[in-house]
Length: 391
Ligand SMILES: Cc1ncc(COP(=O)(O)O)c(C=O)c1O
Image (cartoon, rainbow, N blue to C red; front, side):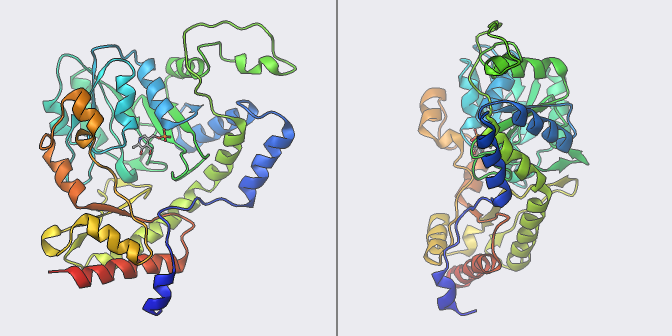
């Protein structure tokens, strides 16, 4: 393994794990002539619900749509407040603003990078209606504490599980714990349909509302109106949204879901390799997964001990790029983003733990189709930068 040879290799941040089975499944849908939501979508929902262990799974066009419909289903209204961690993607909070409600950003717990229940408690007001815990990188939040907090304050809980397929908390699968859980099948996620999402729930009436609202608020079987057994007649029961998944996407999803455990094991092995290689280094901190949880390893977030290094996080990422490794950052805290500062009056310094951890975090490539030489390249690049730039 020579340095010159390694430098020639480019390791992408992500490469979807797609093969002949996915191509075949999508081709079959094209041949069938039925492209949009239909039998494949319902089959995907059935298999997803079974995989998670939830009573209902409702397929939608994205996790953003899943979060939006979930907030609609709990009746979020103008003037309400919803607690959201600041360390997340904008989707988790922007959906709150769709209702004229306010996303109240909460600081994070430095150990897991997830929402800090104590800070969440401090931010509850008489207007607080719900809390959206985000399982960052696929590592579950402390759901017991959050559910206690929610129960004591009559808050609804909607989990943002965009990263957390599959993950578990105290032996319970994410997707079976609170009343609504939103998943993502975006191109870089652990199971992908290109774009797509799913909501799991055990509550029949919520599932029914989601099914109606994802398709313009028209009755549940209106999707059939162009099929032989369908009818031209339909009723618009509510003003809804166009958030359905298509059979083309569902066909991909069914194949991907079938590989989910295998793909998770592959990411787990990569994470173990990284952790074994980096844990002796003073200048970096590897992710610690609490004993009572399992993670999907959607992301491997490495934290830099900046006092042990002569370079900052930005330079570390550039040094990785110089060695052929693409890294990213998850996430720039929302309260540092212009839209949240302008619209919700956030300022630098408001959520200090999130700011500090953001400054020293980077995400390394971790995906199930990673080749041995790609894993080695990442380990080599991090080790080389660490030894070259350590104090
Ligand atoms: C934490 C989190 N929530 C929600 C989303 C939105 O997912 P989607 O792209 O499926 O709408 C993302 C997407 O990256 C995310 O990272």
